Figure 1 (cartoon, rainbow, N blue to C red):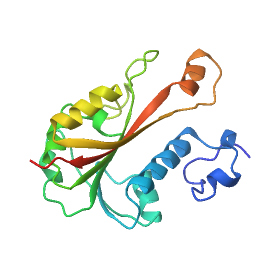
Figure 2 (cartoon, one colour):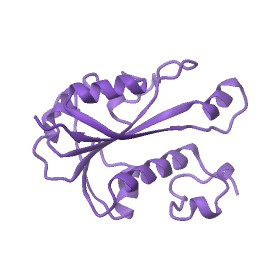
Figure 3 (cartoon, rainbow, N blue to C red):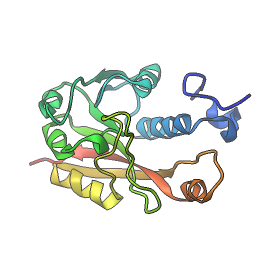
Figure 4 (cartoon, rainbow, N blue to C red):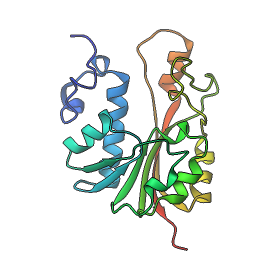
Amino acid sequence: MGVLNIDQFNFSTMKKNTPLSQVSSEALRFDRTLTFLKATLPPPARILDLGADNNFARIMRDHGYEVLNTDGDLDDHPEVVHNVDVDAVTAFEILEHLVGPINVLRQITAPRLIATIPLRLWFATAYNNPNDPWDRHFHEFEPWQFDWLLDKSGWDVRQSEKWNSPIRRLGIRPFLRLITPRYYAVDARRKIP
């Protein structure tokens, strides 16, 4: 059968009948993100998802969310998130790409923020795609660093969760990825001044 990519994957039946060996790492990550989102902000909800329209925004729409996306460079124009009428802002693996994520986080006026970030791993260098200037991580956080960033930008973390990132390769680093948390998810609320 091969490995199911995100377009072939049925999120509603994964846990019941899809062997994990047949699911791509991206589909597993999306499933965990969707599960966290549904637990913290059940549909229907109106969401501003940071970044351009993407596969996960489509999945959120398929699961009953109304999703708006941002356009342009959030480092240059953090104000695009200000005064948008939504129930929450989602930032799924985008804040690590920004030079100044605190600027965007401070501009958000929505009452809730649900975000995921890849965690800094002691056995791997920061991600950098030399062929694409946007496909790189300026920051890779430890959980306490991300929590501190959220606190400094006016957010109170109410719930968090970590998960690993299994990949189908042999070797020491793939094994370490099986047992080491790679992603960190948070549900945060805007602090009342």
